[in-house]
Amino acid sequence: MITAERKPMDEIRAMIAPYKKLLVLGCGSCVAECAAGGEKETGMLASTLRMANKMEGKEVLIQEKTLDRQCVKDFVILLDDVIDRYDAVLSLGCGAGVQAVAEMFSEIPVLPALNTEFLGETRDQGLWVENCLGCGDCMLDDFGGVCPLARCSKQLLNGPCGGSKDGKCEINPEVPCAWQAIIDRLDRFGSLDRLERIYPPKDWSRKQGGGPRRIRREDQQR
Amino acid sequence: MKDESRLKRVLDQGGFAVTAECGPPKGADKDTVLRKAELLRGVVDAVNVTDNQTAIVRMSSLAACTLLKSAGLDPVLQVAVRDRNRIALQSDILGASALGVRNILCLSGDHQSFGNQPQAVGVFDLDSIQFVQVVRTMRDKGTILGGESLTKAPELFIGAAANPFGDPFSFRVTRLAKKVAAGAEFIQTQCIYNLDRFEKWMAMARDKGLTEKTYILGGVTPLKSAGMAKYMKKKVAGMDVPDEVIKRLEGVPANQQAEEGLRICVETIQRLKEIPGVRGVHIMAIEWEEKVREIVESAGLMPRPVVSKQ
Image (cartoon, rainbow over all chains, first blue to last red):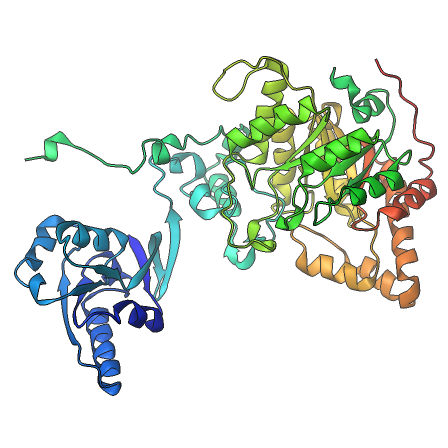
């Protein structure tokens, strides 16, 4: 899923300062799973902002709503009936959600309340970790199911570098060394010999070669 | 051709090579580079110029190499894949060769978070092993990645680094073997303080026949104080400084620790000379280049061999 974290409150308040009628818009998908922009977090942010305005004697209309998915047109269109009541939207969607809403409603500013972080997994209660770059050409079969591009700090395809120590990365002892994990897993499968060959340079054209990427599938079009 | 590399000629002729490191200044002053050149002239066979080491912005390695070359020394161009993509790397290789640089050391580079530009993007488009292979192909086949031909191939003696002290230990020689297979003709190691571990690694390298295929130069760094030893143990990535070394330095008064550090360095070189397959030393006297002559003399490695141009 896509992970995100809420921006600092001062930054959000500075962003919304010019507006008098604000829709705080949550998203029920990925950002709900990572407890950053779901219905609960959206309600909490809206009340915090209302309370802050009240204490400062500011008259601002702040209402909230949560869509099932901000990044899918069929859900965003549900805002059609209410959008005219506001002069700005504060979105708790990921970057894709913010832009999908902005794309549909070109007359109104859509502001990001979250910092979108990475493609990752919920490893534990309150712990999300990055493990995919979305490179467009998955190589996990070659690396025992551990992605060196997403999880090695130097993106080495022929690692580990000299900074691997006791299974940790040189940049921070909190960061596990991806290459230690790759070696351990392939060793368990009896496939360590795979790492003896030189892995060729990555073809980044699958990620960057055609500008912004799109997937078009005729079988899915109507 | 590539035999213009003095380092290669010394090694090919069976000599025990001596190289030293020269860190470029944090400024545009060429005099600093030329002053270091004078300290190393006649003392070492080649001078490694670091490439923004520890991710701190300094004069470019290529520019400093050119200054050393013009002063009559044999520079080794260090190039880290951290800062350049494959277009820039290949372009710099051609430029270096055209400017007369004849040795290259292909590195991953210290992570950008360690330096004074932690907001920088880390490029890492190629890794160090792929980079060695690219340079080797450019030189031997005269082609760049993708197969296009060059009008003139670069002339370079190609090296890579190895750290026998990183983990997992069992994989360290596999990685060395990959660097050699990629085309590394010489290897410079991380600073050696743990000789027992280094000897084990060398034995594994010999067992795999790697010492027959590449020249291994052992890395040494003289310690200036017990404090520096502790700092390197704790803070410098990939460094293995045993407690005995720290204790030995602490065992002498503070004003004699530098002398003791130099003695440890010389003793290390003397032990390295006895290890089969070690073909030279690489002295990384960090901002202490004035001591390199003394180290080389005390280790019995002076005078440096006279090599003929082939």
